[in-house]
Length: 494
Ligand code: NAP
Image 1 (cartoon, helix red, strand yellow):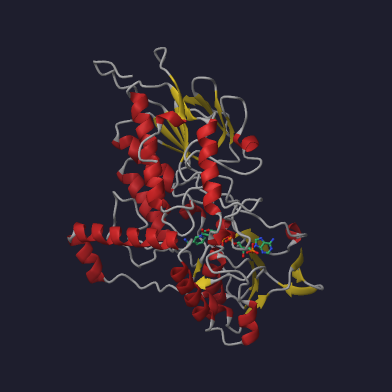
Image 2: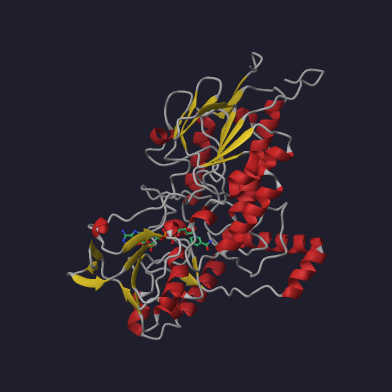
């Protein structure tokens, strides 16, 4: 394709949707490659994605801080092994400043539609602005759209009711009667904190969760100074955590001794619950690892406090005074926290994305989300996902995943700059073959061993990655050109 004399480098216009971890990464990689015509559209007033949205008390990350960083921006300064949400948000803001992303980020600019006009993408925002781009990178993450429970009467509640990702600024729960719906990873972090201040905390549990204990020691000043002085040691620790996490996260899928050990740790953790009836109510009926493992040291001590009540009767409805369960018992409340999770299969939606044939992502995904190797869609030229469908999420570090995907996207963009194609998208056949392999690989995994979780679509198929992360690296090492349709460059761009 390339001639004898190298073609002048073309300058692509790139739209990035979302200024969270992966959107900022996309901007950084473009800047490092000398691409300056990119815009990061962000619907909120700050960067940071999930770490900006989630500000509930107790928020921490259950991936170690030395690993939960960009591989090119390691930090020796973390205060604990598992960092707080505020500390992570500050990290992303610091990195965005270092790479001077402010001039490319459009805050308060919600992308409402993205449509292919035959040659480029037209990107429209809620304010009515329209601009054209050669590439679109959807970097919205998997957990950005809060899922509110469909509970009768929720709107009639007389106190404050809110989702954990919409925690009201300055909220003081001291001396109040508080209810929390849900016992997932988020609730497990919120409960110990709210239990410390509320007069009474009522925890509404629909399904018991396995809780894996993990201590969160502070980083010593000496240790931090050592890592600051010896960047190689910092790199080595990052790599050790990375390899350990990748092996551990993958082995959870099928390694019997590891699964048995996780089960044992969870059961031992649960054994600290002294009251046999409470312990029975907190004991899940499915295998540890089927739902995303909840990592918590604080939940069981908190649930045994005198001011905390676990309610396992199903919620019947919400009334002005509180929550009614079972046969109509009223639990009077001043505030109701909805720790009910996210629409984990939304990805770039609700943005309307219309491909080359006129079909929207929403229409194509009606029966379940899919993509080509997590990053692209047939019929959507020059359109890429970071943390798209079937990305390795769950108990991995999503930063490592996004870096692998962005390197792949950059390879396409570099080919475009050299003028080797005008637009590209994977073939329907290659996408089908990839998804067939995925479905076959899910058989026998722990995720389909008999529980309901956000990992599964409505047909019970996991929207996860069933192989080691090394396999994602292998599949995204370089584009497989046979899997793609390419249109040639035919005219000079305006
Ligand atoms: P989640 O795991 O989806 O849990 C939602 C909880 O709400 C579940 O207990 C669910 O019960 C309950 N629920 C939902 N609708 C309900 C209804 N109508 N009535 C009663 N109960 C209802 O959500 P999450 O806890 O926000 O966690 C989501 C994900 O965010 C995690 O899996 C994790 O990937 C990520 N996260 C990570 C961290 C971290 O430290 N890295 C912290 C927080 C969150 P059922 O189980 O019966 O559905």
